[in-house]
Length: 345
Image (cartoon, rainbow, N blue to C red; front, side, top):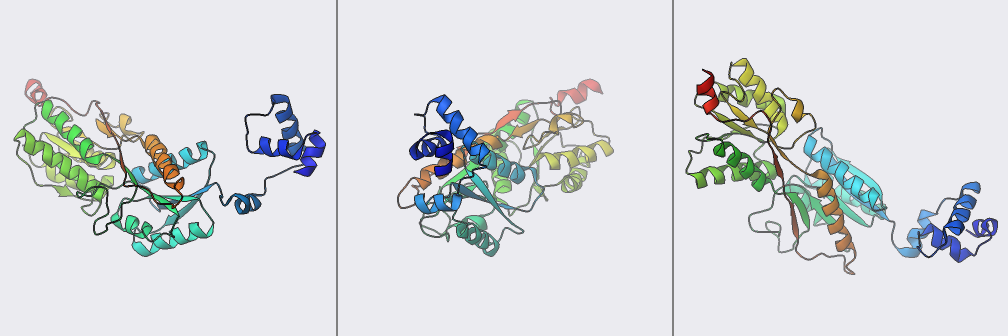
């Protein structure tokens, strides 16, 4: 820094203000300092800065190995928000969503002196592992579904900060949309029963049918992919009384659409289909898929804001807080009134 100051003809303090983006530096002075830094190939010593400030300005993100659209998009949204706020990002990926691998990921990030951790937590095992993070290390969980008892963890008196899409509300929107079109009831092609997000979507679907006085059909459960949707769709397509299907995600809906096509059931003339996620390709399905949009960029921004509030507390502990991000219904051509079937026959 002394070399930069000498070359730029300014004080050491002025160089420090430029490096830390202090506003009280004239534009021409700032440019002269930056030019000197480029000329000398100056780079900040992050290790020294960490020792001096006790802050690494680096955030840890825990993800898991998957090709699922939701978790991948959550990771991208969190990383983008962190970088936009000027933070470096260190990502630790686990192969399975079990307590020990997640706890090992927390330890790895803690050893790199991250200022805080955001973990993608579609299962409770991730959150319970975070509860064993080093004292004073701020952690926020993203994803999953809120426990019925509130923001506290099941079996724990300690609150934990979380950010989630309101999956129950999204399922209500999807089911209500189909009922409002005139369908007598709505069938559900669900995701895996041990995932809280899948459970929340089943809950929202079932609650809406009960409230409407509609018959609640049996749930067909599977994985999050098109193959599972195809298998579920074959069973549903064989039942000619089925006129509306709410799918737990868009990939399941893709499999359902193929099964209906192969069975000669037209969409939406014979059967209406709604997905969940609003994948970028969903508008290009045949027909374009009505779905529930999840704003993963907003999810990342909310998670970062919550973590920064958490980090600003001297004790590193956050008050009970569970942030919900509202989903949005995106109507497209895969849904319509059941009257279309009679009019076209």
